Length: 578
Image 1 (cartoon, rainbow, N blue to C red):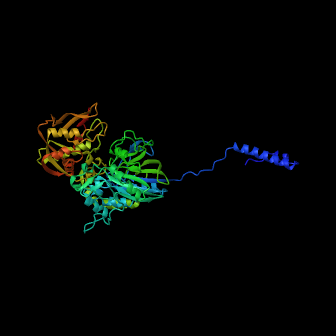
Image 2 (image 1 turned 90 degrees about the horizontal axis):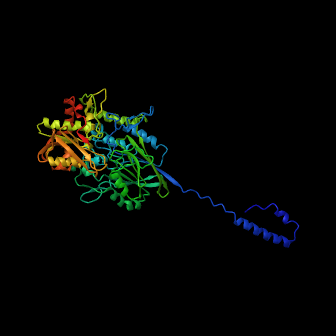
Image 3 (image 1 turned 30 degrees about the vertical axis):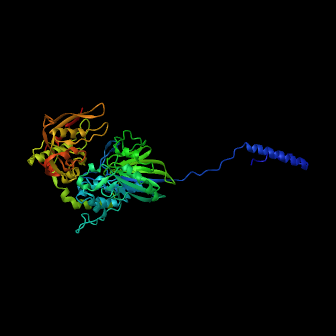
């Protein structure tokens, strides 16, 4: 009510009752008229409550528990002191443990998950112990769950299950006291080929703060093309998006309020590890296709497989990946309403730089224990070299120094054993580390097995010139896709170009300096994975007159130890883009 006007008391003094009554009526009318023109102050509305959920993630750890020999990852980042952009050592499970402790401090509503390939294709310190120390270490990091990766199946499903369940031989596990994993592996789209039912758990629901959060796992649908066939007999891999979408009613029925997809499949990204705009120009690949088809009910997507570090949004939803080898950790922060709806989402990739964290003592002890158990095999010297070799190619060349070195070693190894081979080829996905030198020691078996950890056998087979051309043509990049060329011995050279229609074409293919003859046969040396059609090499599965030559690691060891100029002879220029 408005305050009484100052003159109202004078008007009511000394008047008759009738006059007073009339005056009261007029005053009330006047005040009512004034009040009708003054807006009432609305009641204060309290803002709707929100909650924050922090999701930390890694992917493609590949048993990199060691801090060096080899260094897990060396991302090019500004030096903290000088600002110079240069490679900086990152990773190692003791540093990862410290990073996770610091990053999660003061964030009670946080959870840690992984997107697969935590083991397999591992450095020798872990591989010689069947990756048991890696699984034991990751189990101590409060990992809530991991998607299954294709490399978890390298030795077959039964060996994978043995490891996760901690089943040992009568004499015990190779890692003393190993008890399996303390976290579940998830794979909604890994099915029994006979029954069509999932082989592993499809999801896990965790209470994180006020919310029941469902983590739903998927392995890449393309696993059959990147794992030897004998390892996945009786298994079927369904489409990731379709499978995860079909699970939504079940997840809701089980009370899940927030759904998060964790998949071992990803995108290709040429940009920085962190994009504040989340636009990630040029992002492409199967991870993007899956993201576009995945139901909006999923709050975000944690990806892996492509060993890329990115923080992106596809159709407004987070799609993230933490590089590889424990060199990065992704932190994704979701702001949610009380029903679990995403109001805002942001993410950042944190580098696990060895210069930024003190190694966790307990994990240092674990790594030291693994080092002692494997020292004799790892430290066996191979050769002293004057220069190393990198595994990645640089335009306009499609071959890399290390790829050339490996292919040359395989051809020489086969020829030395009486195989009349013409060429050798190596799949780039099988080259897992660079050949790096340390001034105080020779190249060791540990270095060689970090480069080629799969223990493949070399196979010599015969294909026609027409089939060889088809193989080379099929592996050329389509449109602006990232190239992944088979690495070739010095006896094979060719050029290629991208046509105006986006179709790549071969030219000037030569074997031992002579033009490729489509009608004649050529003897080719490849590893058994490629010989069975792996990594897109279906043409090789049709190869004739197969002969097993020997272990791929033995070929590289022999070539390095017997040929002092092996690295110098592996210079690039065998595959050239015009």
